[in-house]
Length: 189
Image 1 (cartoon, rainbow, N blue to C red):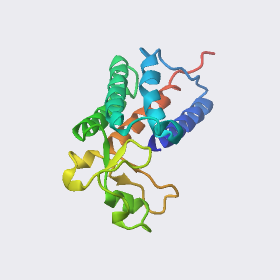
Image 2 (image 1 turned 120 degrees about the horizontal axis):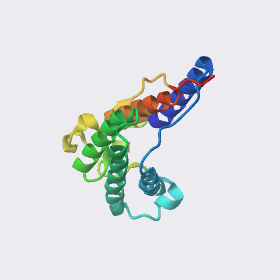
Image 3 (image 1 turned 30 degrees about the vertical axis):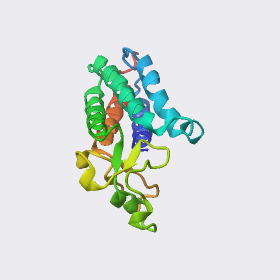
Image 4 (image 1 turned 135 degrees about the vertical axis):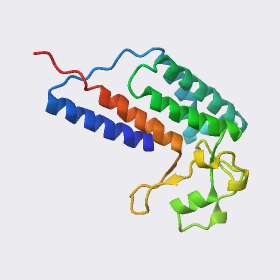
């Protein structure tokens, strides 16, 4: 969700900048962009209820790790493109915490309770997958690198509730930088 928010903000800012400064939008040539499709597609499949039901849960960690490795290779091949260093740092951070926790992104009962305060802490059972997400509900004591997991939430007044990680912030920041860079070139007159 935070990535979608970053895309909307980055794209809106870039389009406004291009319009006000009379600039054209131009993306530098990316290398191995097909890796994004191949890497993200399996994650989409296990997060959609219709197809997610068909994938055994014990396969998810392998899909997650393989998918993230593909994205890291893509980012590595494009480090000269604006924003990719920050984006890559976010991917590496998320990969690190997911790999250290058995191929799952840990989320805690306390974080879930902050998102849905009407439900008691014990509503979410430790050791279970959170819906059709990449998250596994783990107690803080059994989470490796807890500060890198999905522990960040938005303020209670924010209309949509979700949890995200430090890596997600880096990925979103890198995405905004990439989108902003699209309008750097002035239109020739």
